[in-house]
Length: 62
Length: 294
Image (tube, rainbow over the protein chains, first blue to last red):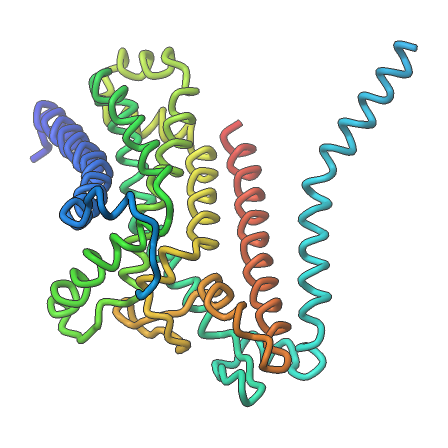
């Protein structure tokens, strides 16, 4: 039996929704990667940040 | 007097235009002259296709580095190109204006991060993820310092380049074409696929080539996560050693080993020629696509 035109329209709409979601997920992945980079660096760096780390001149003895 | 000014301006601009091309030629010639010493001792075929890298024994096979570069770049592009194009499609065709306007500066920020930050992030997050999660899932052992880790970091680094150019390309597609397609009953995706992507095909290709060039020459971030083992990689979970990392790691300590500097110059020349080759290939493809679209 041949598919009804309504079925074809539904298929096209499904493809439209699928690619809309896929594109949105891709954009989210790109933006999330930046958040992940900034988040990781800040998470690791903030505990080590202090005024004493920035102000005195190094005296050697590393 | 006006004619003289006109001629001077034309010639001056001609010279300035020719300079970048001349500079490329100058770099290639310079690298060739510097690497000539190694060609006198080892034939080019042995340099390019031998995997024996033992500088102290005078063996300088560049195959592990060439394949390492290709593995990392191809992995990065396979990961980055589809995601970047789909992200650009979303931002250009589907996203509300405020999302598009706020996403653009964020992507710019991603482009502006120094590559060493990507490298540090890769060591902290991507390397353990590959070693502890992806490798066991694939049923192999990996320290995490691998082609895949390099590919993931590099893919994220190339996102902004590809997305930016693709968005620019999409913005040049006339709105009337989209409207005509939608008015004929096409869905948004069909319009994107048959009008926007088709019309912007050459620009997308150019964007991918730009991403490729960025990925191919990237040094710092890749060097930090790829493992730097001079062996030909057999899988994504093997460590690799791309050409830029080889040059960056060894240039300072080559003086004591004879012909080491010539071997590294040869590596730089090979890197440059591969990038040039792919750029020319992409340019030719662009011209062919342009002709076909017309």
